[in-house]
Length: 243
Image: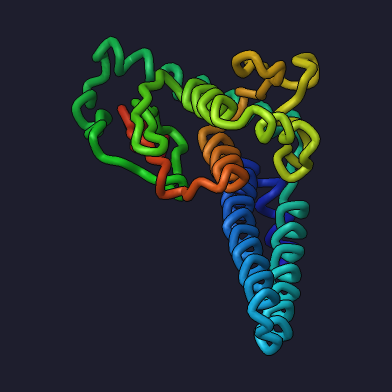
C-alpha cells in the first residue's frame, strides 16, 4: 500500500489531490455520525438506559480508529504545496477559458457542454470542471457566477443567521485546512481573501470546486443544517473536454 500511495503522490499528483478531497468529505460524514451517537448517549443517560450507555462508546472508539486511519492516508498523499498550487491554477485557468468560450458560444459542442440548470445536485457530487449557475439554501435560490461566488454568498448567508457562530471558525482547527487557513481576521494570511459582510472575517477563495464543496459541508454541520437543505445547480459541464 505504501508503494502505491508513493506512486500516486509522485506520478499522479492530481489524482492524489482528488483522493484527499474525497477522503476529507468521507471523514466529515463520519464525524457527523459521531455527533449523532454522542447525542444518543446523552439521551440514554437521561433515560437511565445503562446498557446503551455502555455499548455506544465502543462504537465511538471504532469510529475514531477509522478516522485516524483516514487521516493517515490523507497525510501520506500530501503533495508539495507548489505542485498543488500549480494543479489548482491549471484547473482554474482551464475552467475560466471554458467559461469564456461557452459564454461567447464559440465552442462547437456548446449545446453538449451546457446542462439543464433546473436539475439540483448535492454536496456529495464531484464538481471538477463544472460551472455553477446557482445554489439553494433552506429553500431559497441564489444565483452565482462561479464557485468563489457560491462560497462567499453561502458564508454571508450563514453569518447573517448567526455571526457569533461564524466567527468561531477562525479559531476552530476543524474548520481550517491542513496546510492553510480558510477563515481568518488578517487577509494577508490567505490567498484571494474575501471579506464576509461586516464580520471582519476573511475567507480564502482560491480553492478548487471540491474544496469549496467540502468547506460548505463543514459549515452546514456546524449550523445544524442538513446537507439535503443545500442544492447546487449547474450551467455547464466541461469534463468531456479534459478527459
